[in-house]
Length: 111
Length: 283
Image (cartoon, rainbow over all chains, first blue to last red; front, side, top):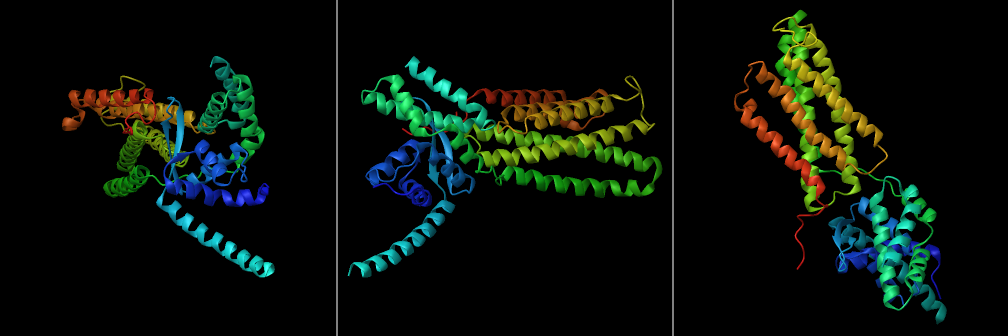
């Protein structure tokens, strides 16, 4: 089972911010981490993550800096800013409301 | 390895027209491709196959470009820019207060006051842009300023340079009407006014550069020009005054002028270093 495009799109921001809350990271590693955590069920078109990262950077939620990979190549690293922590906290609340609501509905339906 | 480089370079060349003005996006996507190709070749895929698969997985460049087009480059506040705007306002108020008594006298005194106010504010605006450019170059040694910061710097530098051109031109024109102190060895102007013309021409040239590069996110060459512009202002203003035997104390001593030029030149040379050159490396 793969998630729908809309759901993947909606979950992109909380996923990215949550991963960056664990520590600095870069685009490729973020995609790999999401694949691993979702057992491959959340499949982004790789390139589509980058506009999300740039939008978050422009909003001041994350900060970017150029560094070097182990192979000595240029690589852009992202880290979570204070504003990003606030956004993440808000996103968590919102997703928990959705989760709780669906849980109640489906829990009742299952009974 | 050379196969991979060639294929990735070809992908980049094909994508470049769609990402005009955002080279850092292409750098980042290219970095992603390299990571994916490394993973695939390490798993035993042939280089050409790995590159094609990585490109396919990255997505169509047209789709990526249209997604990036939705991400506006919003100017972000930057402390040096704020400082420069506050200083500009204070200098304007101070100059106007200083010149007001002369303005109110009318006649030649008003023209003279207009001349002094125009060139002073014009020159100082240019020096403030030079300060901004220096802040940009110093920041760049530690980290690449973000697109939002670059947009803020570009906007402030453009407006201040435009103001500097207008004020300097007005100041020089008013100055050419003032008959006092006229020695007239060049175009009927004294050395200080020739300096003013040089500064106005330099600023107009920089403004034209800003205009022609307005669609590019790259501002490094413009910042180097602005630092060089500070040297032009210092020599056109304080240096020319020295030629006219008008001393501003140590400010226009030969040693101070040469030291300023040398420091500015050194600052311009830092543009040759990669961004983040002085950033502390993690062990």
